[in-house]
Length: 163
Image (cartoon, rainbow, N blue to C red; front, side):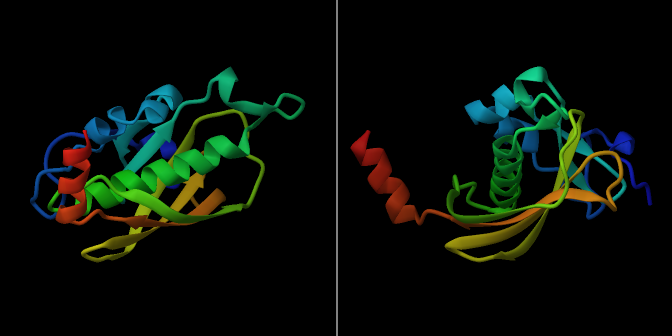
């Protein structure tokens, strides 16, 4: 098992389970802030990861230099949202109910990776655990748990009538 983010490759083709890979990249591209961050979906030896390339605009502390904590929080929330939406057969757009972010180490000004694990996916909500790292997956820089609301069909129809 590789411990670096460098082994990640752009996604294509079926997953190990034989199902076609959900198009996480298309989901991310529908979110303006994900496009602003330049998030890219890649595959590593364990599964899908979200890659955030480093840019000067993402640095919060130029003395170290280190990434802004809000950028890491956004990476965690966006990764959780895309993971939950890709597992939802109705392809509903999840809304964030709650998130807990743990900042474990200073995030250096370099590429950052995030992977998601769905703890529970129900009919109305989803709980996703996300881990972020730079270089060595065994040394996470941040982690988080995000609880998402999956809108019911009635709520979806109400939104359509309001537009």
